[in-house]
Image 1 (cartoon, rainbow, N blue to C red):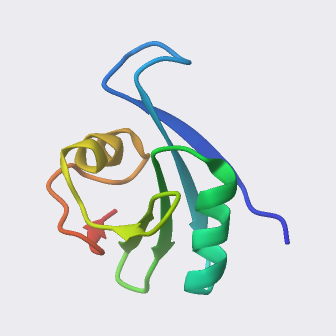
Image 2 (image 1 turned 30 degrees about the vertical axis):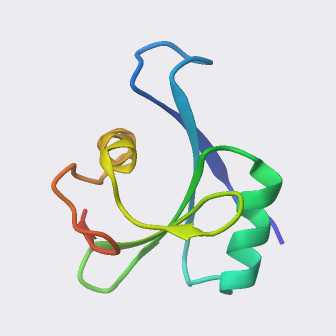
Image 3 (image 1 turned 135 degrees about the vertical axis):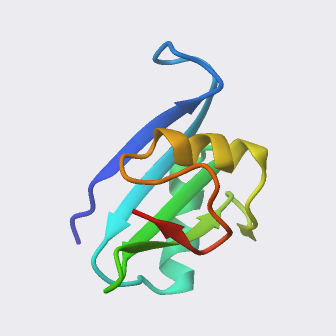
Length: 96
């Protein structure tokens, strides 16, 4: 399986600094176990999985190395840096 992953550096304007998180956009949801395994392999503080639905809304699931997690300040900031996402998103639902 080939997936494109982007690493986003939060709380900085410089690469390789700040708080990095992985972002993976797919056409359909991967299994929860697979997303958790990918997050563990990335070994970053957060890994975001996004799927664009039929209403131009990004559905988002966040994972840490050990477990799924909810939206917080770090993730809201990262959403600002993901092309097409907006910072006033609710967990699991962001307008593109």
